[in-house]
Image 1: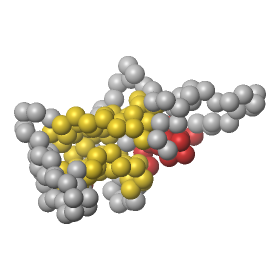
Image 2: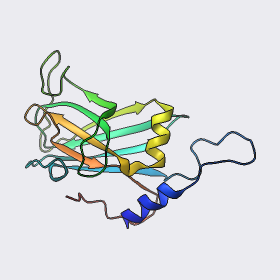
Image 3: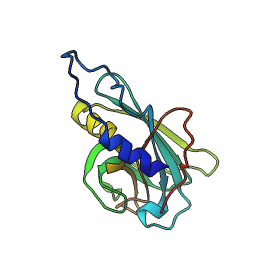
Length: 173
């Protein structure tokens, strides 16, 4: 179960006793991370959906691929720190189409067509943040902001898993 993944991830020790630098990516992290994005987690009624795939990149970085479907007037997307059901501060920007999350300022919001998803890639380049996300992924979520829902239209907790592992990665309200 996914809750077992979180408790196992949070109990892993990262200390090394041989004095050698830790390998990148650390051997004790999940191979991949995902956030399934839905309106139910943002407490918003919407047909929009998506997912974020997160993988360790070059040392101290996290590669993020964001796939959004059937969403109107996207302004920004971020990784936030916060448990399921709790709002938290922005810790990393992922997309920025407008200056402000409500669509004001410079830039133009982006709308997807129902048959053509938006696929965007970015890199989180903050080694301390990357370590924190990899160490305790369930303490972070991805949030996509729109003109209509500047607090977030779709969101999803980040969860870790290993390749080949069976998971139940549907949105959980």
